[in-house]
Image 1: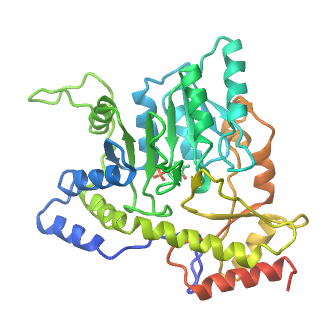
Image 2: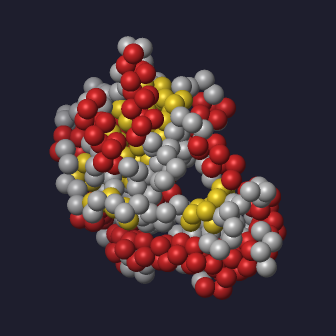
Image 3: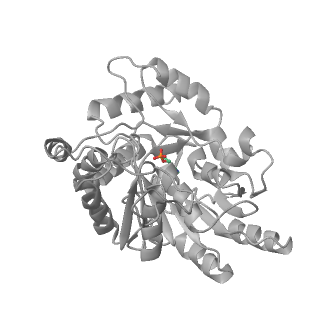
Length: 377
Ligand SMILES: *Cc1c(COP(=O)(O)O)cnc(C)c1O
């Protein structure tokens, strides 16, 4: 990874100020390990913020997805319908369990899972005598998916939804926080997300049994016995009390971070929208997006990789959009339903620097260079 002073990054951690108080207290009280008051405190904060009943803090978003799938009893022979336009961490936990992802294309408005394609995929698999075991739905770049339509399909076919809201903490759909529509929702607090615990994740749910089982499996599935006894295979997926302390400080400023990221999106849109052929993802009326990353589609005649390299010369970090899962060598043999929208997005799109800590001069520099490269000045 290149680092030169003055670099403008894609998305970096942004402390709120109180994190160090929680961490310092943890060190003073010697709660520096996997137990301590910051953990239930952070879980409580997550529940309050999302208005969900139970929250389980975990070591990563990937761990949260793995556990959520495991809680549904998913295993070898099962198929899971998964958004194709996403980071690989959405799909890999399906493989961890010996199950098979079946990829579902996005729709053009939100770039998240297309309800019509989902339905077509389910009907096709049912025809083959294979009932999908779960729907793993991603809110891409923080934009809420079409939850009303997708939840209706979930109910109609009795297939549970896990919301991968790793990028979407703070986003709302029809007035409710994303992550609360499915049977379970997961978040990531990795360093590049809207808030961070350095590394971490969480499951939220309204089902007490699921939350309890998640906690049990995340702590090596210890049976209630005075010695170490195990009837099930568990994991070490706990979040430390130090990390949870960072999380407590971060959640205090989450709403401000959402506001800042939205302002960054609005700035880019204002400065760039006059460029012919350049497109932004707009927010449907039902949705409020956290705008985790500002993404653009470039005008015809401009390839994202050459723009990325040219901006790199200016010490500006940008990134191509997700290369869809069904085009990954790892998933070359998996089923895919869709019209290749994500492939077209991948070939045209770019993520712009979106850190909530970006200064106005930095945003101006990005815009100036982008305009120059697109030959509009
Ligand atoms: C970041 C991310 C994850 C994984 O989260 P980690 O905390 O990095 O394990 C999963 N899904 C999506 C969509 C992500 O963006």
